[in-house]
Length: 244
Length: 189
Image 1 (tube, rainbow over the protein chains, first blue to last red):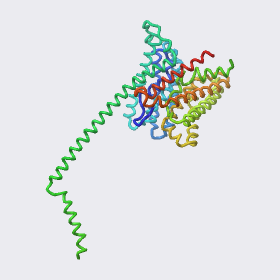
Image 2 (cartoon, chains in turn yellow, purple; image 1 turned 30 degrees about the horizontal axis):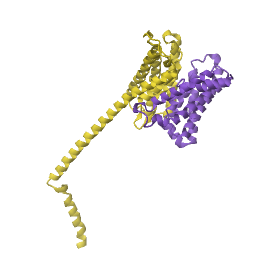
Image 3 (cartoon, rainbow over the protein chains, first blue to last red; image 1 turned 90 degrees about the vertical axis):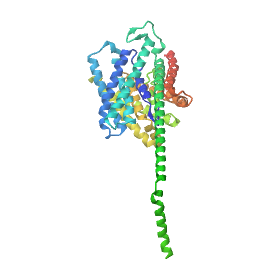
Image 4 (cartoon, rainbow over the protein chains, first blue to last red; image 1 turned 30 degrees about the vertical axis):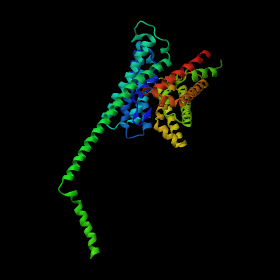
């Protein structure tokens, strides 16, 4: 999963979606679970970022899990006060959002620790929409293929039995992951090409600049900036005492 | 059918934590290039899961009368954290090279979240022996899938695989195939 350039953000988001794939079948439940997981992650990581220079990363992750756990328990309590039929199945399984939040924290706590506040918000701005995007795409396609509905609106066919099972969901998630990964790899490849082009032009400019400097030195009246004179002087000084 | 066989078939095969609920898949995505390391990972996962499961069962049965449904999650996280750190220090004392890989491949995090997920998934309102047996079979199920993934590591991550499918997508497809194979045991239940 990891390589020299760091972790693949598409893979992290897909891993974060994994614990939630069997819990919700319809898009409305998926939106609910996705938002609870994102909320828990954003709140807990904001608190943990304060401890950046105080603790080691494993301990920081443990603190993150405790805070995320508290946030999810509060969300569960609020849900029990106002139960909604639309989210009935997912509402009882909010606990699993903790696993999702934990996986999302990998990048911020372990790989790219917060060095500046802007960098930290930049990570949040990439991670949460990517996770929600993959989860919503997965939820929409699965609801259409498994039940023949979209947000409980009938589309006119009964759906496939295979897509209701976990292996079906895993295959669908694999396809979505590969699809997003191909875009990510293409973008990465383009960035690499761009960086190489920039470095090539930098080298070209440097070569031209160096060539012009050499020409300026050659054209100067004092040969070697007076280095020859200095060498001759030193020779004379060395030879002087011997001659005496 | 005896109770043990039923638990074996359900917890280890049909409701496998990797293929049925996909809760332990994050741990599978960690390093899988050496056989001893894979075996150590399986052992560590079983140690954390079973020890924290026993602790969770005892605390839950003690506090059952006090309506602890909102503290349940906190108990799980605290226990899994405690045993994860214990496993971390044991691992560090056992083998420095393996510990280096453990740290490098973020296994602490993946194992932590997987164990939390499996403990949430397990049903605690049952007889103690049944609960422990179910945890043991969950661990065994994980170990089996772990070794299958170890065997297929170079096919999944090697140059044979297309670029965009390499790594996690192929691992998920492998999980789906194993899930299908394990679902066949439902006939026996």
